[in-house]
Length: 428
Ligand SMILES: [Zn+2]
Image 1 (cartoon, rainbow, N blue to C red):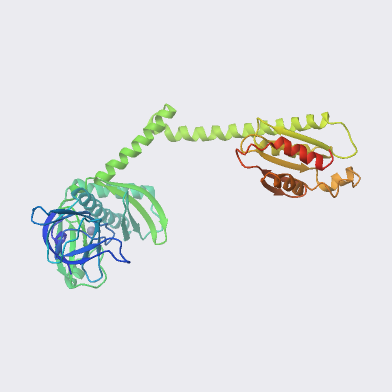
Image 2: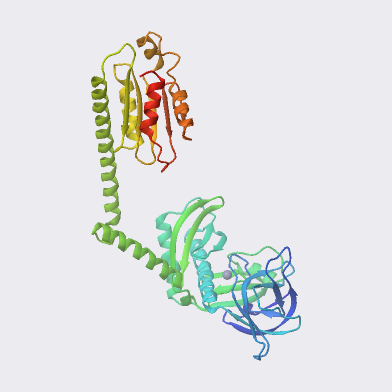
């Protein structure tokens, strides 16, 4: 088992050690790894992510090499594995190394992790909601509370209480006790029985729990605790939070986004939600007005087209290509033509990119009656569309009375030509 220097102090950022084992690249592992006699590198465990840093080989001599420690993991046998990122060379077992962990990343993890202890304890103190798991991500952290829901007022109160503990700058101490002692101490969370000796983290007169992670030495160093969104999860409610520098960064990012939104509305920050609500309502209304207007326009154009078409024995055939309206309007126009009182066939296209075609007819039954059965077998809109599109590699289809399709965008296929072809096919 590797001796863990971070157990006694989270402030140990540099250390000397000796290489115990080296695992070269293998089929199972794409990066080489080294195991040291002792290490200050924290391995991913207990919800906290690993440290990163460097290992320096040699006694500051000419063959000094700096190896990047990209990931640190805990093996089942308790040894800590340092994965190296493309090292120029690998050390040999027995070689002396000097380790340096990335202090900023460590500081951040200490803030998040201690913040989690305080926050979990606050949820217990205020609402008896125990934390069942903790996750530390790259952007934010989260705890899962064994509670079906957590209200926004509870979130605000827990945040306030947790920050009060931060402001009081209470000492955070590490203690080692036997399992029997720990059971008597009333820990917030007792780990499953594995070891005889337990490492306890105590936030003075507020929280006592068993933990192997890295923590700050006084609660003030957490800086601040900012609660974010809550979400229902299988085991209860997930509460996202950020501490210290992350809290400031996130608040800064939110502020920038909100400021930008406010500037767009020429409004104050706090008026943005109202402005958005108003805007959404307005665009809904405008969309409705536009749809109504297009509907009326299509109706009038359809009636005019039918009127201008001379009477014949069969249905009136309306052929129209729109160069200034999209396929949605072409479809609407075709529907209006075929739902009017006069039996009709609409062969309609939009040449607006991507070009499309709509073939429709007054429902077959009505049409067959109107044409005295003459068009009953030929006017199948789906088949007709497939036929004209197959010659140009277009795609589409539909039923006997309504079919829609398109030609590849930017293909320069003349859809008006396709309409004429279709009209000739049905004998227009
Ligand atoms: Zn902890």
